[in-house]
Image (cartoon, rainbow, N blue to C red):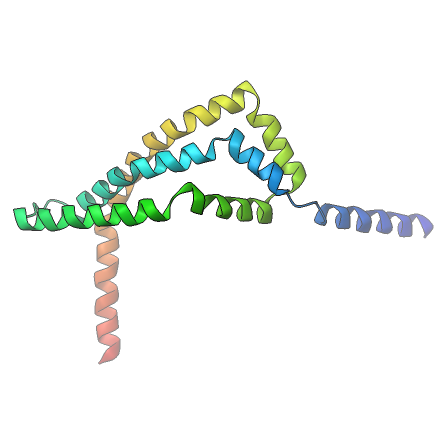
Length: 168
């Protein structure tokens, strides 16, 4: 019986210790953001906003060709949206979000492990190559979404018909 009590006590203590992991400090999070070049990633993301917006417009238009006046309206909207998005997605606004989310999600030990990895040649290679990998996957995802669009539109039409029928 004593062994059982000891085993239970050890299990409870280890569970408590695991659940009480020290949250990551702001200093270690800042070091991780620096090593992973998070600021440069945000800046490059801002550079890709226009292409993402163009892809969205192309997807929305499908096969339709806008008139010159419609194209002018589209261009004006894109310019205004880009200004808003670039103003909102600055590093100065994003950094506090990163710090808060990392602190809420990661322990000090986990951040230390990530720092250890990202400081290695393999970690640095991943950091350098990740933006290119993301650029390559974006059109792939857009292609998947383009093929899903007619299906989503069908679901929407069915929903509207069902909603209309339910209102009668």
